[in-house]
Image (cartoon, rainbow, N blue to C red; front, side):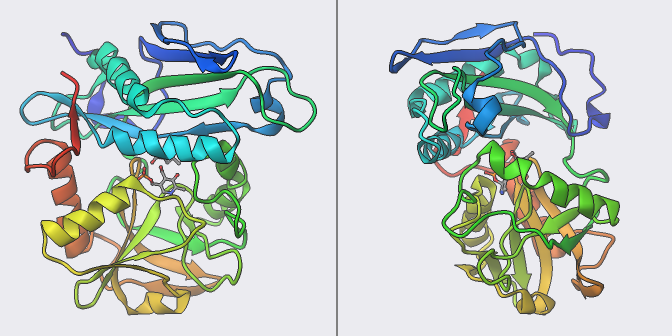
Length: 341
Ligand code: PLP
Ligand code: COI
């Protein structure tokens, strides 16, 4: 199979239409078989549930070309189960998890020409999502839904690749206590847009959100979980009911413990503790691990000892191990790598 003529090394994190997407419709209480289609357009009522009341949930995962030349994805079963949790919270009919994994495989295989070559630094980002499609005017769940998966080749999420980021503590909250912060719903991202634009206008790369109830504990950013390294090399990650359970973070905690022999802790992290950490990173599918050099809270700066030029040494080891597993350079734990072709 011949690859598309794309400048893989210079891709940013943007959308580029590929040849195929998977579409399945939910009508009369059941999901149809679904098809691969070349049609990237969606036609629906102006009154569709998604347009009026934001009834939509999504996932994000990546396909890679390994050192051996295989095309693989990373733990798609966890995306399938998280999409089910998200759907249930918004009263949407879950797309069956086994069919989710099959549909991801089919979509990636159909777009194999867009999977960046090994070593190019780029990956194929896969975006499964579902939304309420029929007209809804009283506030209630839709009766008809569409599940769709498209792909797009991407480079690094943050411009500058692995250069440490400067982030600010947001004055806005991302999630309410007992709200929807723990699911991947479009509504969480819509309400973060003003906060991220404000951060960018003020010269910051990202926001750090604090817990909405007390604003004393670290939660996450708009698109990634936090991971901290203590001065004695323990990996610490915030525990909270209002953050998204990142698959990358869960994988890194396992890698830290079982591959690198580090101690790991998932616990509440007070904002006042930040100054005691040696390293900080953002972890997520899009972000992979992006190092944080500095956190600014209304002019007060916390500068991590790892500095503003390079990834800290422990963050780097985690990054190398995780990407080594994803790219086939290191043996993966059972079930983590899903081979497509
Ligand atoms: N937190 C938020 C708010 C996100 O949008 C994402 C991205 O998916 C993550 C964390 C990271 O999750 P994952 O590692 O599963 O991509
Ligand atoms: C991902 O990492 O897959 C995400 O969904 C983050 C998104 C904000 C791009």
